[in-house]
Image (tube, rainbow, N blue to C red; front, side):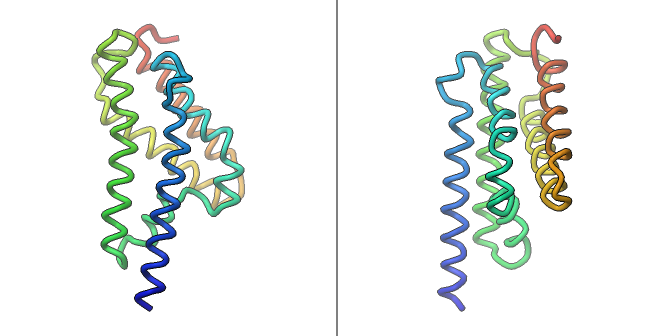
Length: 155
């Protein structure tokens, strides 16, 4: 039983690392502006939702669900993964605020958390109902927030 639990933890940790690296590519140097990086973050989910759904959904959300009450060590790792994800998005927003690309009045941590909540909720509903429309609604809302609240000169 202990070996099985350790194997499950290792598999989930490797999945979290792998999915995180793929997502981090959205924030890479190939996207020249900070606004492009935020759009790439959304595009990652639009482009990869088939793969995410075919492989059981979001690995971080799955690990969070599995670890909630039964695997405290994994729960800590999942919390770290969410925090790192939030920090990555938040840093982009903060840099955009510093260089004048983004609205200086917004709270970067709140917006990065909101993006994650919307996307994770969209994945959950779409995966549960086998209907991608919920993820697309969430992604459309993130784009709307970027365009209307984060950009310095909203469109």
